[in-house]
Every structure is written in C-alpha cells, then in structure tokens.
Length: 149
Ligand SMILES: [Zn+2]
Image 1: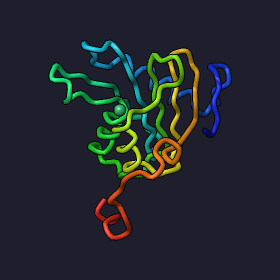
Image 2: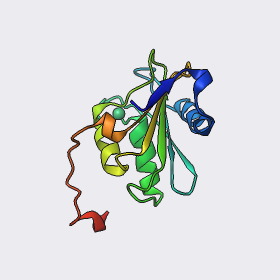
Image 3: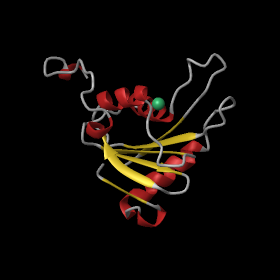
Image 4: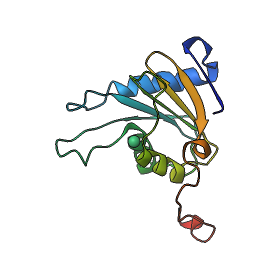
C-alpha cells in the first residue's frame, strides 16, 4: 500500500478526481443492489472519464464502474495504457476495492504502476496501483503483439 488516510489528508492533486468519482456514482443504474459505485479515469490529455455501475435484471450483463470508465475511454479513442490515474468510490466502511474482474481489466488497459485511488463516501482513501492490486496478472500482451494494441 502506497499510502492511505482520511478525508482531511487527501492530497490536493487527488481531490478533483475523487470528487468526480462521487459524481459518477450518482449516475449508477442499480435498481437491484442500490449499491452505487463511481469511477473517474484521468486520460493523458487531462480529461476525466466517468464510469458507474450499470445493473441488469438478468444479472450477468451488469457492469462495474471501473470497466464502464475504461471501456468508454477506449471507445472514445484513448489508447490502452495511456491513462494517468483512476479513482473509485462507493458507500463502504473502508475505501472500496475493485472486484477481481475489474482488476484483470485494469491490469491490461493500465500501466502496472498507474496510481489507483480507492475511496469511500466518508472520504477515507487508499492510494495503490495495479502491481499491488493484482500481482501475477494474466496477460497475453508481450512485445510481439504490443504494436496491435
Ligand atoms: Zn468490478
């Protein structure tokens, strides 16, 4: 864990992204769980892409906030592994933590040491990265097929 703290100690440079994640969480479509999650992905040009969880009555088509933000940004033309940071938030007792599926997707679309800020609605936070969140991540990406990404 790189660092952690409470609302009053969140570094200034993270406050905009953390607030954007809260705003994104308010857009969640969660009629089944009522558990709103928001993600805010910072791209290489300084723009922020919102993501929220989107549930479905058939359950398995549901999508998490982190993947929504990443897929949106990729669809908008941003390159894999060009992102600068992501913040994720939800109404949890401790800073929210990404599910296993999102960790796998984050590990492929983000650089291993890209900062990941995990927060909750109380403002507790933890700063980490993909190396910490998913050590030994599965990957088919190597130098041969990097040029195709
Ligand atoms: Zn997830």
